[in-house]
Every structure is written in C-alpha cells, then in structure tokens.
Image (cartoon, rainbow, N blue to C red; front, top):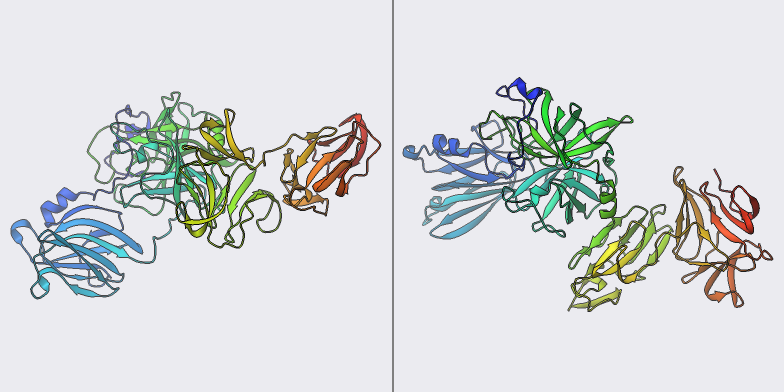
Amino acid sequence: MLATSSSLPAAGLATAADTSSAPYAIEDFSYPNAAQILATKGIKLVRGDGQITLADCDNSKPQIRVMTVEDLTVNRQGTYCFTSSAPTGYLALELPRVFAIDAGDKPLNAKLTANGATQSVDIAKDGYASVGEGVVGGSRSTLVEIRVTGSGPAPLNTDAELPFVGRLDIGDSARSCSAVLIDPRWVVTAKSCFADKPAEGIDIPAGAPKSRTVVTIGTHRSEIVELAPRPDRDLVMARLIDPASSITPAPLSSTAAAAGEDLTVAGYGRTASQWRPTTPHKATFTVAAPTATDFGMAAKAPANATVCQGDAGSPAVRTENGKPALVGLVSRSWQNGCLDAAATDKTGASTTRVDDLAAWVQATSGHVLRAGQTIASGATLVAKHLKISMQADGNLVIYHNSAVPGKGGVLWASNTSGNPGAYAIMQADGNFVVYTKTGGDGKGGHLWSTATMNNPGAYLHFQNDGNLVVYKKDGGEGKGGGLWSSDTWMRPNQLPSDGRYPAGFWADSPNKILVMQRDGRLYIWDKNQGKELWSSNVAGGDGSFLHMGGDGNLVAYRKGGGPGIGNSYWSTATMNNPGAYLHFQNDGNLVVYKKDGGEGKGGALWSSNTWQ
C-alpha cells in the first residue's frame, strides 16, 4: 500500500477530498495496465494473483517461456516470458497460436482452448512441452491459463512493530484485502471485501464465507470459517479455523481518532509499482472529519503516500502505553498514484472506526457454529476464559484456558476418545454431533450428540462465560431458548450454606482462577505467574460435586454421594459451624467463613492461603 508517487501533490498533507464516493480499496486481481500491454505487446492479460507477471526475456534467469506464431499485424511476439515469484501462482490470459511452453524452475499447469474444447497440460520443473499446433496434427490453440503448482504459497514478511497485520485472499484470486488479528481466532477487515458488488452495497450475510477464504499473517495461514459483519459500518470479524496463537493481537483503542491526530497505516495493497507486495508498506496519515462511524485521512509522511487496492482492512494505529492500539480500518481511497489506478487529482482515504466496538467484539468472539459448520479434528476454539478442542483422539473437550490440553483442567468432555480423526458438526436439524472420521449425517458413525434434533435453524454458541449452548433459531444469550448446555459457565464467587457446584465449574478473581476439573480435582491458578498455587490433590471422578454443608463443612463428593449418604473424598473439616459459607476472594484466597464472618471482618475457618 501507500504508494509513493511523485505525481501526488503535497497538498494531500493538509486536506483530503471527500471520500464518500471514492472506490473501496479492494484488490480485484485485474492485471495492471492490461490495455496498454495488449496494444503494444499483442498479449491479453486478464487477471492473476500477482505471482506470475510478464517480463522481458532474459536467458540468465529462470523464466516461464511461451512460444507463439509471431504476427506483427497485432504486435504478437514469437516468445513471451514470465517471472514466477512464489511456489504457487495463477495467471489468466488470452494468447493465440501457442505451440510450446518451457516451465522454467517450477512445475506448472497450462490450459489451452481449441475448437470449443479445453486441454490441460502438466509440465514438470525445468520441463518443456509442445502444445497446440506444435504437436503433429494439433489444432491452433489459445493459452488461457498458467498455474505454478508448487508446494504451497510463500509466507508474508511482517513489520516487527505491527506483527498483527495480515492479508486476506478470497476465492480463486477473486478478491484480496488486508486484515488485523485482534484475537488468536479472529481478524477484522473491511466488510466490502466480501460484498458481491461493493459499489452497489456492502451488506453481507453472517456465517461461512461464500468462497474459500484464507488469511496469512507472517508464516501463519488459516482458512476463514465464519463472518460476523457489523451492520452500521464497513467492518467484519472473520474467524480462523486454526488460531494464530504465536502472534500478539492488536488491542482495540477505546479513544476515538481526533481531527489533526497522526496515525500509522500499514497494509499489503498495491504500491505505485508493485502489484502484490509481500512486505507491508506503512506511512503516517493525519485524521480529518471524524464522524460516528468513520474518519477521513490525508497523507503526512511521506506526503505523497496513498492507500491502494488491497489496502481495505489495513489498520490505522496509534501508540498507547508504548504499544500500538487499533483505532480504525481502511475502507475507501481515491488511489491517486497507485499502480493502474484511474487518474484523479483527489487524495485521501476513509477509515472505519473501531474504538467504540469493544463490547460488540467481545460478544461476537464467543464462537457460534451454524448449520453445516464444523470443529475439525485437531481444531480448538478459544473463548475469553475457556477453550473447546476437537482432539486428535476423537474426544471433544472443554478446558479452562489455564490448563494444558491432555494434562488436566478438563471441565467437560464428550467421552469419545479412541476415534482418531473424529469431528463435530452443527447439523441443519439442530443437533450438534460428534462423528467418526468417515461418518456423517445419513452415513452413520455417530459417537455423541446433544440430542437436539427437530430444531431447524438451531445453532451452537461457545459463550464468553464459558458455557457451550445449543439455542433455538430465535434464542440466544440473554434471550432464552437454550436446548442443551455443557453447564461450564462461570459460577459466583460465593457458595452459600447448603449450596453445591458440579465438577466442571470455575470462578474468577482479578489475578487467580478457581477450577473444579471434570474429574473432581480442585485447583487455584495464578494468571500472572502461569502456575498452580493450590490443589485438593485428589479427584472423585465423573459426576463429582462440591457441597457447602449446612454444618459448615465444605465437602467434595463422588457421584451418588452427598450429605447423609457419604462417599466423600475431600473436605475442609470445618463442621459444627452451621451457616458457614465459601468465598473465593478478590485477592485469590479461597476461604470458608463463619455465618457472620467475611472478608475484612474475620471468622475464617479454613483457607487455601493463596492471597496476594
């Protein structure tokens, strides 16, 4: 992005033109300067992913070479050469009378048309193939597509100061935008990037994207499996199937951009000379004309910078407490000076505000699965406090985020281990099911389900309170309509006399967490130190529960046990104190108090000694 072209006036430093009618800064993969190339070189270049580009022939370089029957009446040359800059690449073109192709240093596939039929030709690395009329008895053929078929796309270079900036690619080189990681599972980008006809409207449906969509952030690549559009502005949250756990997300600023303020913008869009940069370009822009949902920007440093195709979704950031904070996302731009952009004397860009969206982002990031959406084998959904993992062994498990999968901290499980490759799916009939690797609706292989069938439109919500819930079509958090839940929601910090919590419960304090694992073991985890501070050291198995006895004794019982029945496996031995209660304090101490005692009042009967 941010092309530095000498054609841009320095006046862009002070003001920016009204951008309400400017084009959205979306990469559409049309080949740059295609009309001029056709007129001067006799080859029609249609579109591509930017990884295969026309070049001057150079025998000292590994290039793709295409041989044609020369025709000077249409400026068609005898040989055309192309540079391939990545392990994979795509180029659509129209080049008549091709008779031979030299693959160069990468394997490729070529498609040619003749007499209404299409032929596909695979050519190995360093290989050569005669095609069309180059083959005895062959027909005159037009080359319409070249694909480099290497091992996979190259990673992107990142900016050390802004490691959360990535690139979003939609479909088979249909659209591309920049994006920002705001959570290991979520990026935000421009909603217009997914609209069928952005110039006519940018509203899009929630749910899975229409076309396969991939986000790349440095070396991390993940498919996008869910879109959550914001209705009042050009912004959408997009969920990654594979979390970017090793990358620091961008925090959202809570302070609106102010007129005259300088912000840094960075993205992977075109520049004045590059079609598909692999390194983000950045520059400083000055805020102009803030509104309730967006603000304008004019270039400051360099003064002739501009926002180009592919920069929609780029972050506008400021430094807060020594770290970058996300203030907005690029939406529209006049693109003056960008590669193959229409000439204009207008400058500036429009940016979507995010500073007022913290509550919406938090609510949305509680993950939702709708009909047909899956949790694949090995995938993990991470909510604010808990995570749900479709383990490789086939067990669907909810862990507290303080836990290490496979090493404790289990709050709930489907008990379907021993089925490697199993997956979970939210079916159209409203049932959430775990199937074997080869199973599915109508195919068998059912391992476990919520038994919520006959509820078309029902959906699964992994809420930020930690509860996994199947809701009716018109139900939802705070609205009712729950059909099934994992019962793993965050409990209150006080357990009154004769109260009970089931195994799988958890409670929170500012710096510590109290957890009762599914097997009944209790522990307290320090968030800051990342370690366990206290544990009951014993477990009672599935169905265990914690009970604050009427006699003042806090007791952990096995399934089927209870007051007057027995079958306990741990207690605080604080009996003979009727009315006593349990309190998990803000300082992280777990305390049994007398009926009239309390924090700051005394009357403690037992504690975990985990206070700060």
